[in-house]
Image 1 (cartoon, rainbow over the protein chains, first blue to last red):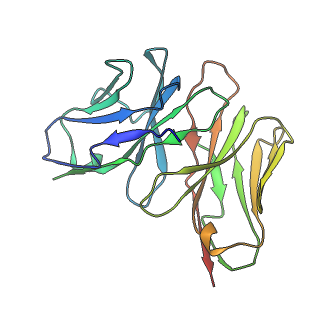
Image 2: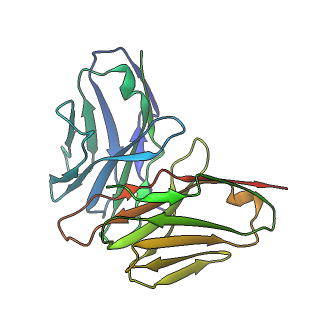
Length: 113
Length: 112
């Protein structure tokens, strides 16, 4: 069964550095998402992407964050000038249609020191 | 705006039943239910798209009351494998909205 893949599985970075989290959605999916989950807490919506542009973003998704779909298969989340509070599990998800289930990747655990 | 889930946590003995509720202050287009095991990604359980729709999968079923903007997840004769955190996700009817927001989750623990 096709899967959403995320790399790396764990990223450690120093405060103030930039990180890029990578995702390969399922190939025929049209809608892409990034979510964040601080340890043991809720799954927070960050941003959705459709038709090569951002369709929705949350209040969390400020100028520190950006997303790209550079080559038609990868979907990246860039976090600039990381802060301690950015430490969390970041999940990428994709789906074929709006009425379809979300398929989640296994996540990237980001640790900011 | 994210939906509100209740209860926050449930502890059951194997074979007991549970109900998890999800409500929204906004009109809903759909309700999704996912289960997350510790250290893993959320896994899809079911979608409800129409008001009054009910779905079932083995001993897990759900209902969607569009008028009340509520959904409930029913777990009957619970098994140890049902343990995990259950999230409902909701979307509004606007075709421009593409933001699946999740409730805070309900932690279900099934004990032998």
